[in-house]
Image 1 (cartoon, rainbow, N blue to C red):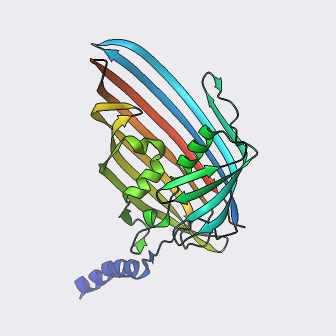
Image 2 (image 1 turned 120 degrees about the vertical axis):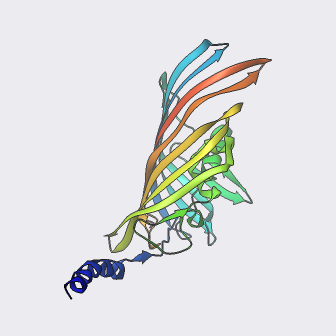
Image 3 (image 1 turned 180 degrees about the horizontal axis):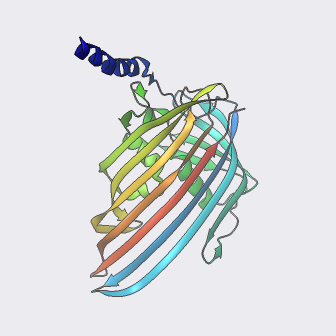
Length: 283
C-alpha cells in the first residue's frame, strides 16, 4: 500500500503539468489593412574586418563600421491575403555613415516613396528621389516578412519549435541572401514565452538560422563561409496587431580563396551586424 501511495504522489504532479500545458495557434500580422498606416524605426550596425593576401603576403587589411538608421510611416494602399501589394513610405529620418564620416543625406528624407509589387519584383517611385536610392529602397521592400514564412502550421507549446522556410531566410538575411547556398539552409523558430499586453496575446519567438555563403559581394568563393543569424521577435501572436520588435545579430566569419587576373587570392573576413526593427500599431 505504501508503495502505491508514493507512486501516486509522484505521478500527480506530472499529470497536472500535462493537463495545464497549453498549445498556441500562432498568427502574425505583417501588414496593416488597406487605408491604414503604422510607424517603423530601423537601425543596423555592421562591422567588417577583412584581409586580402596572395601567397601568404597580406595586400590589404581593413576594418569598416557602417551605421544606418531609418524612421518612416508606412501606409497600405492595396493588399491581398498575404501582404501589402501597393504602399507608401514617408521618411522622416534616414542616416547612413561609415568610419570616414557621414555618407550623405539620402534623397528620400522628408519625401514619400510609393512601392508596388509586380510579380516577384517591387518597383519604387518618388518625386525628387534619385534612381539609385529608389533601387535600393525597392530591394529592401522586397525583403518584407510574411506570416506563412514565420508562423508554424500547427499549434505549439511554450518551448516548442518549428522549421522556417527559405522565404523567411531570404527576407531576414537582406542582401547577403544573394550569395547564399540555400540548399545548406538550417532554420528553426522557437516559442520562448507568451504574455498578455494591451488585451492581446503576445509572445517572444526566437529565430535561429545557419547557411553557407558561396559568394561574398561580387567574389565567387572556392570555399563557402558560415552564416549564422540569431534573432528574437516580440509580437502579438493572436494576429491582432502589426506592432512588433525584431532584434538580433548576423555573423559571417572565415577564410576562402577566389581567382582574379590569374591569381589565387585569399580573403579572410569577419562580419558582424546588429539589427533592430520596431513597428507600431496600425491606425
